[in-house]
Image (tube, rainbow, N blue to C red; front, side, top):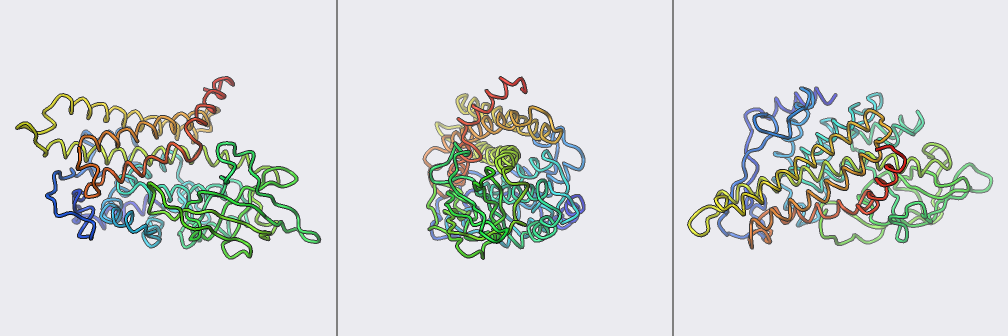
Length: 433
């Protein structure tokens, strides 16, 4: 499906290929945009060319096609609007559905109910290319995909048939609900409860979830709640009585995505909406996060790649002391270190994705290692890219500050990087890595 979509998309894009917008053009003629002269023009780094492109090295022919399609979509549909979406806190559902029409709504799900049937490595390649155009957009797409993959992997045939077709088209959106106000890193201590309703097979869910991406807009909520049998996974639909949403959170980054609390007051959920078996929820949640950690690492790589390209272009154009910044060894060393961190992150993310595809016993540890390293390293790449820009990098006229803000949260979500170290150490003790 995605192979055909990639070829159709590439055919559509032929003849309209244009370089990514300059820093000023990325902001556009908006009221917050300055008339200050643009200092740098971003190079055209579209993913169709191999040449010296480290991002394409080692990929199969299909993966290169997928990446080229995603990169063109990012270049044409995401990058030109990214600054406005961030400033206006606009959630572009219409563009998400355009992405889904290319097979990006349920990438790792089976094709029977609308999935694309690709692996984790394929998905990592796609998410990296999309994040080059907009980190926050792509991050929400990974969350939606994670929910779809849970239904596909652990759900019943009836659940797959009911939920996945609309979710794969993104006619309906999904949110993942694990974190609570008093249960973050200690996910197993969650307090949301699910009790049986007397005389029925239904459950009644009561509790609160925090920091939920897509909350209030999403149609389906994958909720972890505590039953008599242990933590259990439920599918809760937006129109369920007793399901409510808090005020939108005002965040440092990821402003494109609505984020708020989800509260449940005796929300009735039919037994048919239990994913897996009662008490299997924590295992499901952790399995989902293995993939989510690889995906968010891939988003970090894509955002850092964009930030590095912006820094390189700026260093080429900006002159001080009579020569371009790139002529100074200090700048050269900074760019060299950034490029090295970027490539190391990319390799770790792809290695972890391949480990999950292979069902390797150390897949969980590899995912934690990749997430820990890539999210920290790629944030630092973006931070140093801002430093290369000097004072201009601190202004919203230039996109590096937005990328830096968007990447910062990646060291926190999908398990903090401190928890990643706990997982890695535990996997080492069990001789899995």
